[in-house]
Image 1 (cartoon, rainbow, N blue to C red):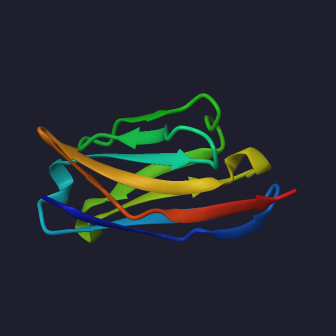
Image 2 (cartoon, rainbow, N blue to C red):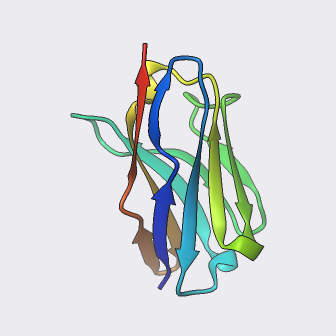
Amino acid sequence: QVQLVESGGGLVQAGGSLRLSCAASGSIFSIYIVGWYRQAPGKQRELVAVITRDGVTNYADSVKGRFTISRDNAKNTVYLQMNSLNAEDTAVYYCKGSRYPYDSWGQGTQVTVSS
């Protein structure tokens, strides 16, 4: 299975941008579907964006037009570029790598948007 480590979180003002990274090791990352999820305090974890091994992407309605997911298989890394951030984007962000029948999660990275 793949091991995943997220980075790039932090504190940003509303309207600002952050780029999260999800670095993988331990398996053939290029064949994994990778998703970014987030969990805000008191809320369920939700899917933010997903990218297939062929680069097909999909986004939650709440982030369409503001977030972009991409992958660099040569670097075993998936990115989440987040623009026009607002307070509702504050959460712990996790990446998940999926290759049937296995799912692997990272430890998460905190994103805090101040208004």
